[in-house]
Image (cartoon, rainbow, N blue to C red; front, side, top):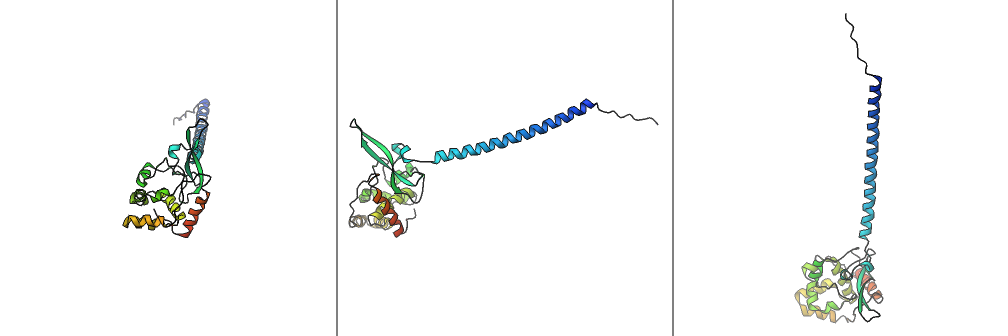
Length: 218
């Protein structure tokens, strides 16, 4: 019976195959480690970037975006002006003591600015606008009252500080414009524009007003 001779692979070939297998394993481990580290760094960088972009400070906002904005602290921004040494008027965005309860980190949209009839260039925080029939008509409109909670909350608090409940005023405005104006005037309205320094009493009154009555649901 003929003998079958088995061909034994050379020793060098076996060692080469083992080396290649180990090299592939090492490369797979290294590659996986690099991918995991890259994902971790990406997530960390994204969180840091999101935090940096989400941090709103009134003093860092351009003046054309100041009014009706809310800082990350929850305090409302207000536009002020001052006279320079050269006699020119300069505007600056400041943090007011007035706290917005319903939202933080907010730049009001152009749609709500138009719908509510407010002005981004308005100075200070004032309830004087509530005496203007055209403004109250815009404020109480469905486009503003139902979809612009930031502006509605601000004027809800300002109206409360004057002894007026905004939902009732808007209901009266919808049925009788004259009655709405008489309601405000009979409350003894005397306030005018307030600066960041003089606004402290206004900041306390709206908060008390919220506690005294239900908050309007925009």
